[in-house]
Length: 318
Image (cartoon, rainbow, N blue to C red; front, side, top):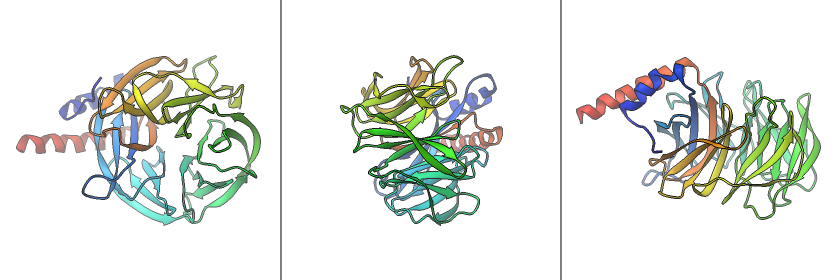
């Protein structure tokens, strides 16, 4: 199904009380033609709505959202974090972390900090209450960490593409302790964005990640321990997978549509079956990082509705 744009979105916003609604933020992988700027696009992947985009400046190598504050955080290759109001696109602040070659971000459960990796054997914490330099919260000799995700229990999974392992770390106060590892299927490409699905009652959770032309997954034992090695999950309709994100009742798979130049977003339920899929033509497969806000607060919906109403009125005058 194709995206729904323009004034149709306003009608969709009016009906969100009667249907599931998520806000997905997709950072462009390459700069916009003619500007040199990177953008974040806003969509509702549950219903196929497109909410426009805003510029975020330089390349986004990691991204995370904080629903309680209505904020989006991006980190660039030089370790600068930019803070945006994700409803309006306003940049609120910018600060240095000291991390160069950063490659991923993940929000803590309480929203007071983010965790980051940057191609070394360390995992870092970035405070959002007193923004500044990142501090090391875990290390493992011989690893080169490129991606990570935080679990609903406060623990963490971190990927090393070169060693073909995903490592699990247990939370221990303000630090993390290595627990165990699970091997990555060697036929897959580099690990992309990772997430843990929203599993149903009595259904074991799953760790999923994009990996080039494949989606990798590791079956877990509740709440978040490995129960086997990684394998490949077949998802049709894509030429390349760019990211995964948690949904209300499963997972979103994001990548390049195989029938157009657009971006395809497919929702899988907790058992792995497809529940919906939409293609967004304005993004043109140009996705680098994704952040998700499940069931945004009414204030965010109101701001998005007002912005889209203004856009619709402007289009009528043109």
